[in-house]
Length: 423
Image 1: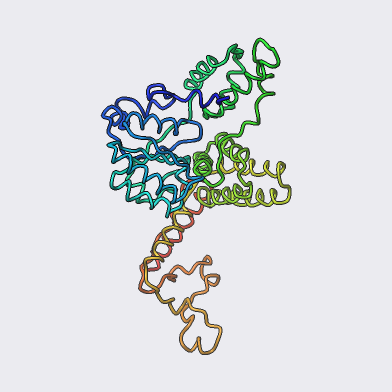
Image 2: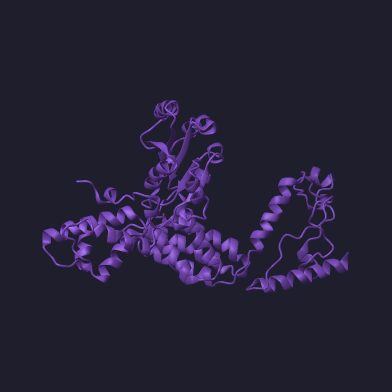
């Protein structure tokens, strides 16, 4: 029997669900459809939002012959055969739309093989991908195609899909309110997953001869719901970015949410521990030096305890980072110093700062004139410079007015005043 997801593929552009932002009459793609002007494009979006269906409908809207390839199973040979078919179509007076599903799975050579035919207009190229085209599609091909972003299906779209799906069953077993909410939750914005769950639960309910599907019955029909998460792709980096920004923004609840989302999705807790340590250095630094200590101990706790016990230590560290005083002064100072060193020449170490472990080095003046700070007033040699002779003193580190850095700022200010008075 034809799967429900295939039976409910939209038949017209107007019946595509959940992508109003992309297909409205005032959108760039909407204008192209109305003008029947084909152009190459990449459809970027999560699984089950209608990329393949939209590509088929675009072929009809642009009056093109539809040629489909999957990058999973195809290679350069298949591209050549498709191009030859497009040439035959051109001879017959028809333009061709070459659709390549999962274009991100093509390597650079395979993507390059498309370029001459996209450039010449022999084919209107439409690629579909779940991965960020900026990283997964080479620049030459990307420059010849518009990128359109498809969104996860929202509740409104899924409810309309449920209405259409139930019309396909005779008889259709109704769902109670809680089970509908559970279906939507299980789908996680994926229309294909949503329709598969409906089909599975409808067949099960028919066999069980029940008048209504409740949440308990539905749970028995559903496989475990897995949130979308790709350990090497955009979902991964978007979520770690959200975690980092929630910590920086002092929101412990949001930070915990993203940490748990990543743990639930299969992220390596050791990786998360490393990122927490980086956050402690980058966004808190010397405003609260305990943060780095707590994060390091959390990482060690995870190594000793493993999951799930060790994950609690990561959670506690995340909360501490979020509520700690924030300062990026140390991070900014390091980046500034790094930038200066990279662009600057190799300057000599002044004689008074050089090491002098041998008689020859002492004879050459190494260490001569050095003032031992502990022998100076208040343990500070105010008149001594620690910079190369031909480089003016720089200021990289500017402590914030938060946490321990308030005291650090006061101390550095006093030391600078002493230097100024001596010089």
